[in-house]
Length: 198
Image 1 (cartoon, rainbow, N blue to C red):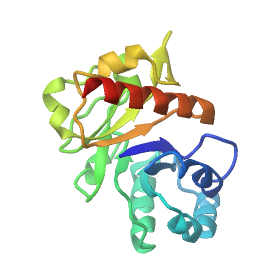
Image 2: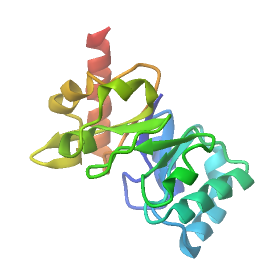
Image 3: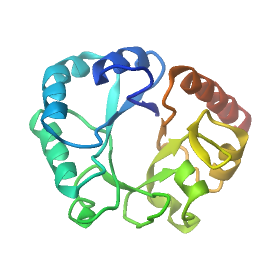
Image 4: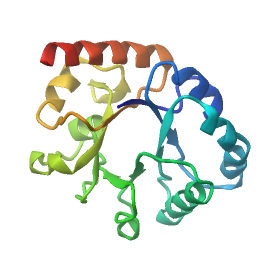
């Protein structure tokens, strides 16, 4: 399944999702903290998100494990289906890694292995190197281009070539390119790669 981050144009989760549902199978809802403003926005938009022709993953808050736990609880209580929760390894993360649907992301400066991993190609290239021995633990890939020490740009050959050692078909593939045209060019490049690799 191919996905995209929930922010490609200025706007809310729902406003982005309406656009993205035409291009991808799932949308990664970026929830970088859990405060009253974020909760109010989801209270307003969740019922509308459910009605769209798409599915969702959730990038959990990156500030505290407590906020990450609150987000998991919120979506669970609201009967909102989540394909995968992406968790940063931060203080207290071990309390959450065994919860259903939670995977741990490799960061530029922090790499902690778990039974379920989200592999970020940009973080791998720019920071600590992911051990290919753990590639069977990967349940989701974060895809983008990387050039001149910059990630989150449209997909390029360098990122694809680096990914080959770690890529397993059948996993979630989420593009973290934060603007629409860059996302669309990445999707075209990925389809070309998949076609040529068959």
